[in-house]
Image 1 (tube, rainbow, N blue to C red):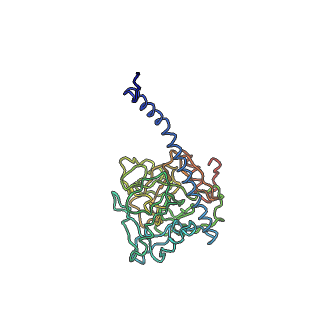
Image 2: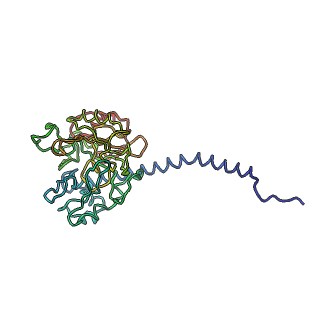
Image 3: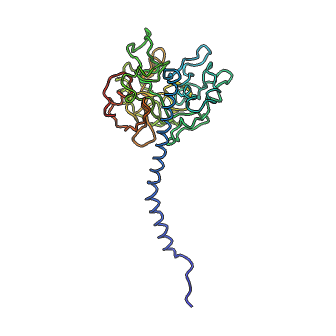
Length: 345
């Protein structure tokens, strides 16, 4: 009687393993691409929800929320412990209980942005009145493609408002005698004590950027996420040239924790500008004379989506924009009343 074979030979087993390995190698990139496409879609939806919230806020108050609220120096708080546009939008993002838990008569807590330099030390609100709310994780503020944020502070953020100006705290108030660029007015939407109205957006809502993305830092130096130090500058073009000449491999990080707080109305966490195209290096000028009104900054949008960044426009549309966009076009969509043509965007 002929024996019936009940097992594979070693060679057959190796052939099967090789075939499976080839199939996995062929299918894995497609699976990864499909997952990233889904994550990018979710990211765009997050920005759309922020756009709806901005419209809801404007409908209620006839003005867009500020990018940086007033500081609480009278309570002994540091200037950076101030509320953000994100905090103002909470009731319009189905986060009313969180909004109601915050006491806006007091400053928010801040996580501490220090890295190589002791930058923006951690701050606790009086009696810890805003501690729990300030640390609260809001999933809609996080891009699903970015898992770089770490640490015990869960209230982190990937989406930032368009500040417009290259000066950290410049607003549209009359300049002080000590201002290094007295003619500079913020052309963006969300800046220090801003009160922009739809009528102020002369370039048109569909031609003006409101929000974009930025990669969160991990707390460890990383050229893609760090906010580097540079010599302070006195104009937009000088800020751009100086920052773009920065070598991320040798420059000193001011912080490696960009985006660690959604409550802070600051360029380290909730605001960006259109000095340089998406994906460019980010820098802050040191030492700056006087207050942060004189601090030159290039805070560039960026994302984990390969070669592109999502941008929320004033009309609620979300556009996927190449990191290779022309610098002048990118700057044009960053202003609300510059009168520049943006047909290429």
